[in-house]
Amino acid sequence: MAHFVTNIEAKTDVTESTKVKIEQCENSIINSGTKYVVELVAGLSSYDLVCLGVGKGATAVYSNQTSSSFALVRRSTNECILLIDIGFGSIFALQKYLKTANIKPRQIFVSHNHTDHSGELPVYIANEVSKSIVRIYCYACIQPRLRHYRCAELDSATTDLLQNVQWIMCNELQDIELDSGDPKSKLKIRVQQSQHSELCAGFVLYENDQPILSFSGDSGFNPSFYAFLWTAPTILVDGRVTSSYEHASFNEILSFYITKADQRQVFVYHYGLESEKPTFPDNNISAVSPGQVIQLMLPLQTPEIIACD
Image (cartoon, rainbow, N blue to C red; front, top):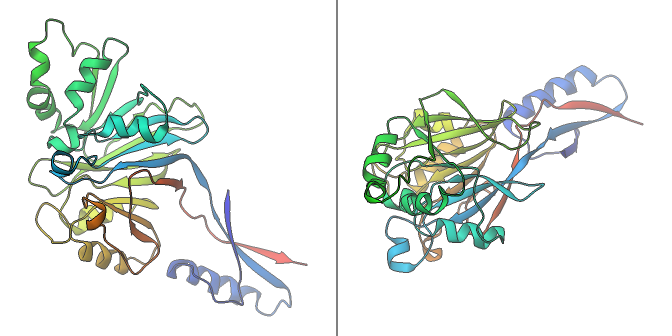
């Protein structure tokens, strides 16, 4: 568990909602003559997130940089539980950053049918289905696009390369369980359609019914979709310099972050090359980099008032 301990008499860097709770606690003990501290308990989840790439649509083709993708990794075993998008370079980057040749994720989430998010899917299926089942999670309305367009080349194979593919189709706001490989860690995702030119969806990931991560997929700025993402303490959000229907701008992301009272870790991806990486004025919002490891946290619990001798 990670603990943030602060003297209630001192100035702190907690969120506004937490400040209110602290003030309420102060009022109840102000005349007691006892010194107290407020302890905020933020538990670590069982998982880390590894950034595999932050490339835009053409970044992999013209600059040989991995498309935007991530790996959810169980911290205790270094196993990839979930590959988040599978665009160009994703599988090689997964092996590179997890330092394991021929590593295979337990399952894959594909946000949409654009090449920089699903381009390696048919190649991965063709190479892996003879070894074990390939489990693919996606928004239910996206599955026909992936199956019939992205994976059309598999239909011409001399063997049935799709017989060991398990499509797990997720309806909006429906909880769908993932295979965590650990009976003590129950994982589920809840998807919602984003705002993009191609049908696309993001998700919120839960561990034991507590949100630990949200992922936007590709999306323009949409307040209701962003409110959905802000359920989780760690947020991955697609961003570009200029706002469009398909992609939110860095300024739109920052402005929405500022309006929210509850503090979150926000990581911006899909910006392209290192030279295009944005900077932000707040330490809790930043651009993620390839190879960066993020420890996923559980939501902050209610502060505890602890008496000090």
